[in-house]
Image 1 (spheres, one colour):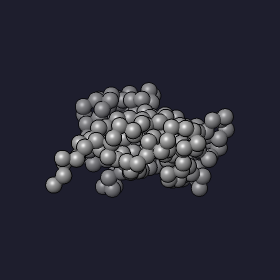
Image 2 (cartoon, rainbow, N blue to C red; image 1 turned 90 degrees about the horizontal axis):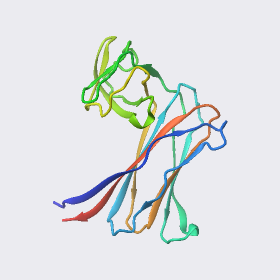
Image 3 (cartoon, rainbow, N blue to C red; image 1 turned 30 degrees about the horizontal axis):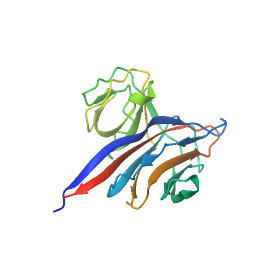
Length: 204
């Protein structure tokens, strides 16, 4: 069985994708250089609601762009995807939830006490401290139990949102560079997005 050697990193940390009422309802992930002889690349895209505005059928548009050369004219559309839309549900934290623990403290557990393994966006007052969690259980009107220990400590200003889209994209090795463009087509709904990657650097 082949043993894949991987290098992991982040192309874009949690970043606000604003609405079309602003001058720039778009985000550019920045470029990831694939010219180091890597065998392949997997991008992990996340688009998460940041409010409870009903975006209806107005999606977030995602262009995955690749280029084979070094000039701006060498960029091409690799894939066009959609995410977002609809309306999120939110619950605010009512007590601090500590890093290294699995309890997310809330006043009510009425939205995700379903056993459906909901993926939720824990939006921190400091956006870079935000994280994704998976609901594994709950104590009624006390806390949600999540699958992995929290990476950060979250104060009461933090809130949980559903309406999370996670999209993996495989980029084959013949491309020189990749980047991701995000566009928000709604007038008032906002999102946070993130881009992580895995580079397959060797096979043994």
